[in-house]
Image (tube, rainbow, N blue to C red; front, side, top):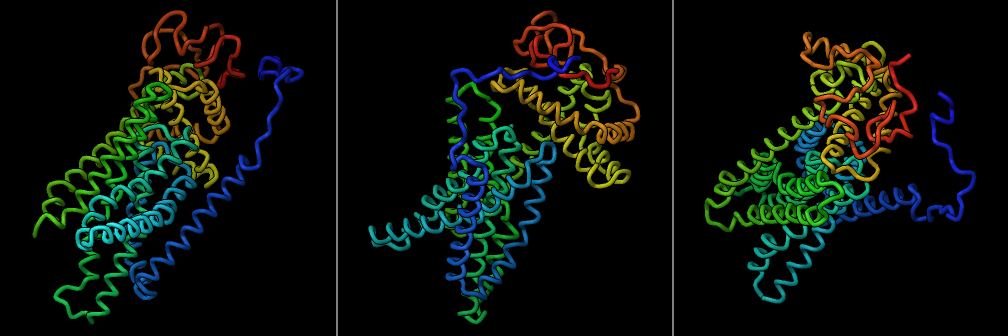
Length: 462
């Protein structure tokens, strides 16, 4: 194939369209620098405020106790995110936003609002109750939701569905709960120091049991509702602008209501807290856990159902859809690559799995008419990423497919490498001319491309 037919050529001059260079504030390093500076300053301020409230000794005790549930929660959300994992920088941003920026907003706004209510009504007890049940849920959930919104807007290609929303929301809430627990546990330790530990029950032990043992999932549970709203908005694609706006707002409102119910449980009587915990918190936690696992399994099923089309086009090997649609097989492929070729190859296999999952989810959105205008460009980018890593990933995935399922009952398993696409039943495409995503067809057409712009090569073909 001639070079001119492999890659598009640029016109000899831009014509009347002037080339526009990004302004200085649009440069990536400026944006990253500003974000890092904002988070760092927020972290210094919030830690100084917490240390002032708790004292140095109380701060250290609270820090040591508050960090205990963090690895477990982060690991749980990372496990949920293994099908199409976010980049680490997104998760670090979410945690730091929750621990620093959102916590700073919450502590300042809650204190100001509570003092203003107490001054206006001359009822400190009522002001504290109102602040805990109304002001705190609105302020805290809005502050945490800002992280989900930022990732949704600026990492739109990676934010593709419900699981992504749950993961970003959960990691943000984990960071927020971490800082809040330092404050509460440090304050409880200070109260024990004042009383000399002569109370019936240690305040520190009671606070630790309620916040760390019984309800470490409380903040992640609330904010996950917001994340689900943004995840549903991502699934809608460019259509349904009203739904894309209303669904995240509905998720945020639900998170606020759940938070308010939890904070107000202490005012429901002697057993109000236990009643809300047993009748509401545990069932809600179980329901969202089931939803997360079910959505994760649905993503794997989407991989198995959508990738066979690329097998027929010659982009993937016959066994790859099965291997990529099984977490056990994916783990085996990475282990195989690490054992036989080292860690760099294992990382390449992991990246191959991530890009293949993104390709399957993209194709599903395109088939449902929910893909954006950049569908063809994004599809080609993902295929290029897979092609660059094929030599590292193909042996590992074939080994994993054979080991995980010695007998693979797949209709496409008999198709040899380089098998050209032939219109026919199955794989989600209608039959006959004009199928696909609205592009005309011709010899050598690709998925999402018109006949005049075929893929630059056909892999596995001599």
